[in-house]
Amino acid sequence: MHTASSTTAALYERVRRVIPPVEWPVFEDDIEAIVALKRERNAVILAHNYQTPEIFHCVADIVGDSLALARKAMTVDADVIVLAGVHFMAETAKLLNPGKTVLIPDLEAGCSLADSITAEDVRLMRSRYPGLPVITYVNTSAAVKAESDICCTSGNALAVVESLDMPRVIMIPDEYLARNIASQTAVEIVAWKGHCEVHERFTPADIRELREAHPGVVVLAHPECPPEVVAEADFAGSTAAMSDYVGRHRPGRVVLMTECSMSDNVAVAHPDVDFVRPCNLCPHMKRITLSNIRSALENNRHVVTIDPEVAAGARLAVERMLAI
Ligand code: SF4
Image (spheres, rainbow, N blue to C red):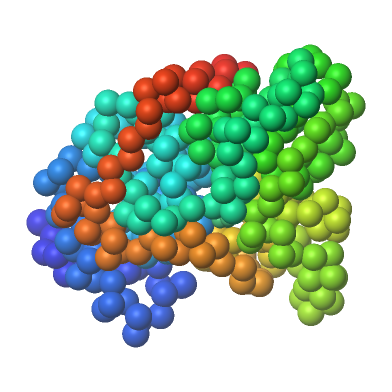
């Protein structure tokens, strides 16, 4: 049987490449408490790829992108889900797991994309472009999803657009994702002006400087980056696709044009790959800490609720996507 300290010592082995020994004692107490609380409450922790390594590798039970998290949560026998990510992800987890208690450790963990559009905006777009189907990126509130015909992720957006068999569609709210997809299809895409505040900061000049400073580096970009950035990259794909690319191709040196913590989390699994790390942090993702995860489990907060009518509409849009 493991004592508490041997448990945390084993966990440290997972992250020693990305967390210096001097920082580890700061995390130990919360990790031990969280491990115990998960058992007591029959809880699981879902952590997005952009969470810091002490959360992602040491207390999470399920990791991945937002949709993968919600879907995998459907398969676990747990009473409580703690979503280590941002609010729209907690809502998506609740949509797909209506019978479970879903907690978000900080209610202020938002998203510039989700905050760029409201349900009313979607209704206005529909009246401006009558008859066009509305495809909504999962990075939106349940209320916006409920006004949509179908959802998409950055991984399946092209397939969703082409599945509708329409010459013109509305895709909200990420302008850059819409433009990146438009460059791969004959379908005309009407976009919204939402941007991810992390990915919009990358520029083609950043990539050129990285290539000069690190000859031979392979550049992977998230499709929430501006199209000019994607055009300069060697590969563009969702967080899951980027992680998969590193595993399959094992480049000697790689840079991920996405949120900072993603490189740390992928690096843990690939000690043979050299990660160059330009650092753009998502301030919303970073609101989640070990300490507020612990507090969420201790105090059962903050419980995510969705109006039943909104939930029914939003679930339908997500399920249509899952059926493709
Ligand atoms: S990284 Fe961008 S899309 Fe993801 S939560 Fe942060 S602001 Fe939203």
